[in-house]
Image (cartoon, rainbow, N blue to C red; front, side, top):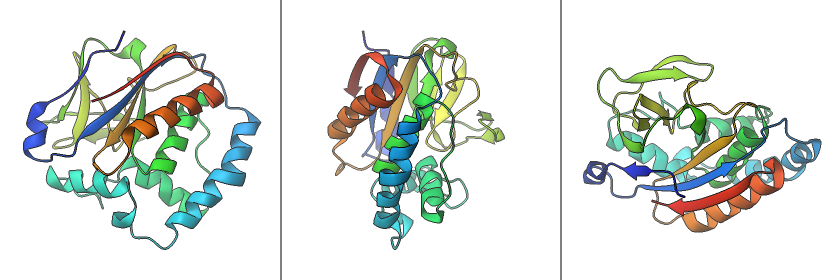
Length: 221
């Protein structure tokens, strides 16, 4: 059964190209295998670095649309960095990606390959239906490793208790840990030219292969 996720229709009045790719699954979250990190260091990261090395950030698919939606809603993408751009900057510099856990690390694989921000959320800490909407003045949350984040005018995910996720940084409340059992992944897409269905299908395969997730369902909003 699909988890109740909705997009606030008012967002389309400001920016029309808004889609969410959703994956809902169960997992036994662990540390990723050595084979995963060998694949990342030997194949994925060198390929991505070569692809983006000479490009401006507005020329990279995925990042381009995410920066555009920031501007449309009144946030500065140079000051409040899109999470996919932050990861790609590490790849461009030759810095290692963070080693968190099997789900979050695959999440970041999907993000650097697509240029899109991707969030993974522990449904054990989510209450009620989820709405993707604009954050209002005074709204914010504690970001993972970042302290309190002012989210005014950001596009965010919110449940009955308030906001908990965005394309910039996820919250400590809904973060995935090795205690997480049921997980929702959101791929944030703001470019109609991107084949989101193909990306969701690949994400499903990657989570199954590298994170051993099960009972997977996917859909697009």
